[in-house]
Image (cartoon, rainbow, N blue to C red; front, side):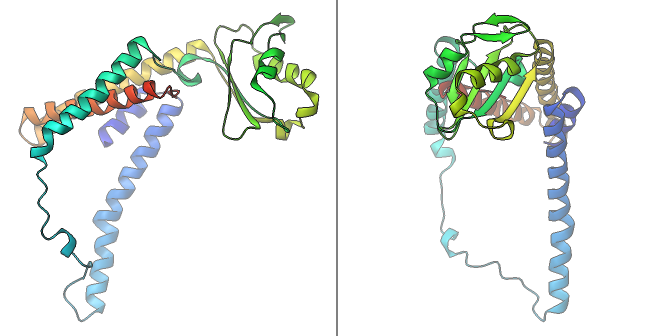
Length: 257
């Protein structure tokens, strides 16, 4: 995992590097706590106590455990294969993949309306948004409730021209729905803008980082355990988890950010 974190930080950009740094700090902190802090506490307890043992609680519940993990492998393969197949079908023929603003580029605005507004009203107002002096129809943009009925998420793809898309959306909704819009601090909850070039670079960096990480994990595991097959197994298992996750995200039509 530390190898993956280092590679993600080296090859990634923006939020990928932030995730990688947090991941590496977490690993180092966990190792320090487990190997140093925990041992120091146990040593102090033993030195100050007359007992030479440390009770970790009742273990009877697991004393007779005999789970045939390998015997359940066929059922596990079948369940995993079904989910993978459904995910692949969804990616290819149903929902596809829905990359977020980070990867695809575009504008995202999260707004708060009080009282709530019907999505069709918002869509109607977005049919005439002024951007850079030109009236643009953004009614086909993604508009959905985000959490509470009062909170609306508007996502405009990179195809919308101009750099003031968010300002145009806010101005149009203020003018068309004044009774539902408060001041800026209450109205605008979130606003993001990512250019298509930045999104493309971020997507490419993420893919390269994952591939390099898998390669280095293969080399490390094969060296550490003196078995190349173990490295292959680790890569297959990791790829399986990634494919399963992406398939489930497609099935649920969840945005990948």
